[in-house]
Length: 153
Image 1 (cartoon, rainbow, N blue to C red):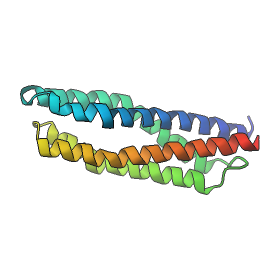
Image 2: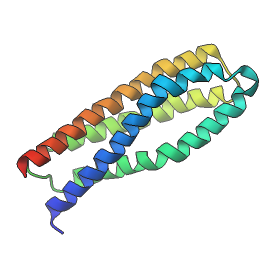
Image 3: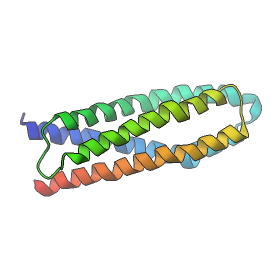
Image 4: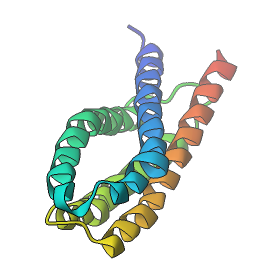
């Protein structure tokens, strides 16, 4: 298979993974996290632990695909029309997302798993706007890369 074809297929898989995450993050931001306050204090700990387990099973494979294809896009020879800065910027946004997830949101979830706190819940909802913005930006960037790819074909 030609190197350019491998790049194209990798970009397509990368785009799919990114938009799965864009959809998930917007649903979580606008629906799921705000509803945490409705769970009730007596059952919140059990709910939060179940949430963390279920979300990890859903998002970790997709985030890994996003990371691996992001790395591959840098390693593979770029397709015509896609500037090298684009995959680099994409990987930079992935790094920022992993950082915020691991060092901001996961610790907040860990704290919430001991019991509901209105202040911590509010902080989680507010800080998650960072990931929502980063994934939305990634979505725009990978669409731009896909557009550049199709324009050059």
